[in-house]
Length: 456
Image 1 (cartoon, rainbow, N blue to C red):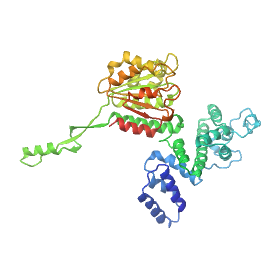
Image 2: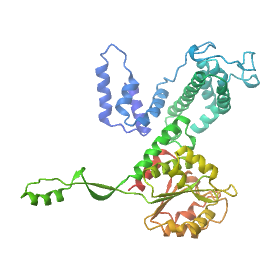
Image 3: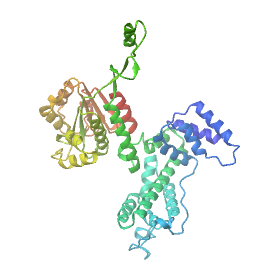
Image 4: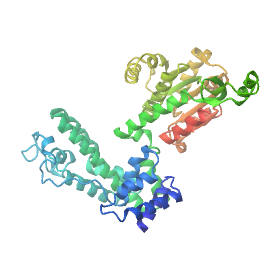
């Protein structure tokens, strides 16, 4: 019981909102279930009581399994496929003559791709656990620990090897390999999280959140499965922004009762309210103009911002969207006419966003001033997504000042960590004075917070 209380305190330190009443409910539930003949599924009970948001389930599972050392287990197969009905052995051309390259490249170590191919999942898991133990001897931060472990495992090359081999096997076998890789990645994460939890200091727990909590994790470091979750969340945020309610009311056939109008109608019925009047909030149709940097340094963030704008454009069409590197082009026409995937593909091919390949915010602002300034009105809110890294070129502050003067608000979202602003070729401080608000925006939680402020 003491260990469970310690785990609850750990969850609180990681940012989970757990009340005293919920903690007492957990203890009461365990007391009632203790008399049952069937074993208690502690993890499911704790999750059901403490976790309110389904998006927190993967992070909770990771922390729970790391804390209680209940990591994913693979059946020992002695180099036989773990699921024979789903595997067809595909011979290669190296190593021991069986196509397995059992001793790895240059005969050094067992390789993950080879172990996955023969279904030796148990040894693959042990290989990862050994790599984490070896990495922690020389790693300081959790980020270094994860990077060193992947380096020891030759992680990215092994994944690339497996991806290439999947083209030559059946769909079922390829799906099994992919599922196994996801499980192995989970084992790697559990090893790193377990090490950080064991350190039990504030900085290490912050790193657990920053590295593995999808709400706090940098957009540029999301896994494939996390990107799918992130895309759904961004689309939802966009829809809410596009249909946000403002403080004004309008008449309606349903909604809240309009007491004033209902009482006035009593006159017709000699004091008897024969008919109720209703009202509801008007939808605050956003008048937005987006300038989105799509240079290589922010491309991971730009993809999610374009997704956000796309979802808004599907709900309301009073939005103008531009992308740029050192040249600028409007892309609203792509979002209005095509599906998301086709729109991004077309603008990637056709949009002339660059002439030199290097970011030039100053030139972009000057072009916008010359060609598109008349799009702005006193009701237009301008959103700029970019890192303000200008490659030591003229910042053209006067042009940005005109954009700010001719719009209602100028909001800047910078995906770079705040401590990197104004270093090297960043000119964020020069542009900041013309911004209504300036936010760091590199993860889901920050994006949600910004969306709430913009939507007010």
